[in-house]
Amino acid sequence: MAKTVSLPSELVVAGFHALSEPLRIKVVELLRENELCVCDLCDALDVAQSKLSFHLKALKDANLVRARQEGRWIYYSLNLPQFVVLEQYLSEFRRYSPMLPARPCADQD
Figure 1: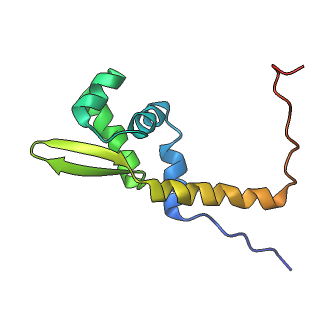
Figure 2: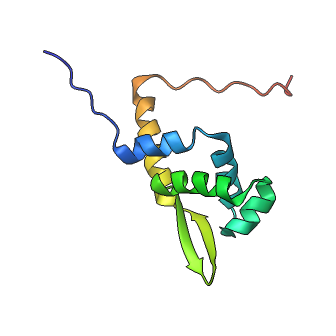
């Protein structure tokens, strides 16, 4: 009998795809501690708003960031529940292999 394979949801696929771009990882890192407006992200990353908007859309489409408009500014923050979904997906792989033993730090003798 053939084994059926459960494919990840579209949001899981979109999440990992969105995180495959280095600039998007930098955006996520910047948003880790604070909500930021597009202008602050552009300044911190030294990129044009048009380029950043493309990447923010990919993160938003993957449900990894939330956007909130205040006046003429759009503020972005992480959508942490979606990161939990990605983490849970990856954690399923732990049951297929034994946990590796802890390795001593290189600093220790």
